Amino acid sequence: MTAFDIVDEEAILSGRATDAYFDRTETTLRHAGKNPHVVAEVTADQFPDGGFELLAGLKDAAHLLEGHAVDVDAVPEGRLFDGGPVMRIEGPYLEFGRLETSLLGFLSHASGIATAALETRRAAPDSQVLSFGARHVHPSMAAMVERSALLGGFDGFSHVAAGDVLGREAGGTMPHALLIAFGRGNQEQAWLAFDEAVDEDVPRIALCDTYSDEKDEVVRAVEALGDRLSGVRLDTTSSRRGDFRHICREVRWELEARGKDDVDIFVSGGLGPADLRRLRDVVDGFGVGGYVSNADPVDFALDIVEIEGEPAAKRGKLSGVKEVYRTADGGHHVGLRGREAPADAESLLEPLLRDGELVAEDAFDLDSAAERAVEDAALTGFG
Ligand SMILES: O=P(O)(O)OC[C@H]1C[C@H](OP(=O)(O)OP(=O)(O)O)[C@H](O)[C@@H]1O
Ligand SMILES: [Zn+2]
Figure 1 (spheres, rainbow, N blue to C red):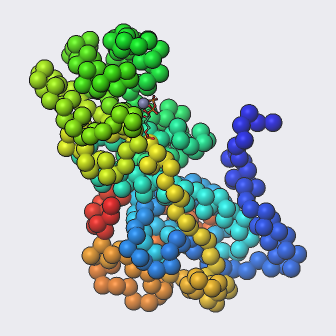
Figure 2 (spheres, protein in one colour; figure 1 turned 45 degrees about the horizontal axis):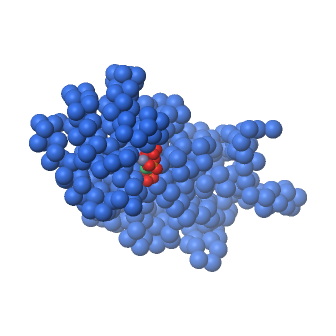
Figure 3 (cartoon, protein in one colour; figure 1 turned 30 degrees about the vertical axis):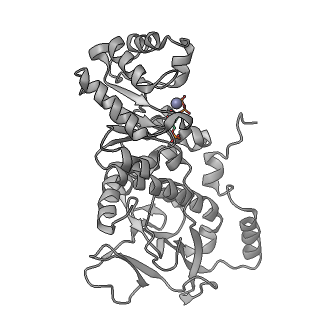
């Protein structure tokens, strides 16, 4: 009996984490002595439609398929795609059929979150942007959320245990609960206690919107912490937000009027790309939660497109093994394998597994994938 309703790693790796009809399929095919050699492709849209999305979740998908007698090619994590396959699996169907549910789950959810993160990143390219959305998702998914946010170009994240998984330090400021615990009117005591108690290397960023006006609390934080204050966070609740940009400019003015030009202003609370575009010139950083963590998964499907070398796609899908290309003008092209590639085009599908063995060693380095994402976004005009 587990403490929480969580499907564990063993169930995922063993293929137990599957839809029941794959159990039935396996039983039926084995009964009929069938296990055809197929090529299956993971695709969201059949044809490019100008809507780019960012691929994420490939590391987990690769580890799921490792050890199964299949050859896999995939678009690297951090590349944008717009139609056609992001992954191609070739081998006996029963080697991977039941893994479809988890495979698509790994890719769909992470890619949706990473795409929203990249949109957010592109809205404020020079600002610090942190992922604060772990609170909106099931805790078992926190590491996936934070990794996808980093892959989309975020500078950091808040979830501590996700940091343990990713080997990175979580960051953050202080919640309203801390201010409330010291009682109305005692904000200075809360800020000072934080300064006394918390590790020296944690920036002293005072939350300044709990009981009174943001400007008032910022001035009080300056008076209380002096040179120890490195920043303020405005998480102004929507019922008081009004002209948030004006509030931020006013706070900036009051800081400068007190010689505190070096005190950073961070904002959070219901922010999305449009807010970041509106505020990026008046604040230093953002905490973004729900816009990224609650992003819709990318609607990937896994389809058999060739069986024993013959075209075999179902209605609505395209038969035959395909290649996908990034064209020199930042476009995306889908073509049949073996046909002539567009001029000046780069093929995106790269070897990932050969006979179940991982062949793309550095495929999952997060920093290089995040760099790829920002570069590909510029090339494609994403976001
Ligand atoms: O709105 P999102 O984009 O998801 O951002 C999540 C922010 C907003 C939230 O404020 P509160 O709900 O006031 O929580 P707290 O009192 O802990 O600051 C908390 O500060 C998170 O950092
Ligand atoms: Zn808050």
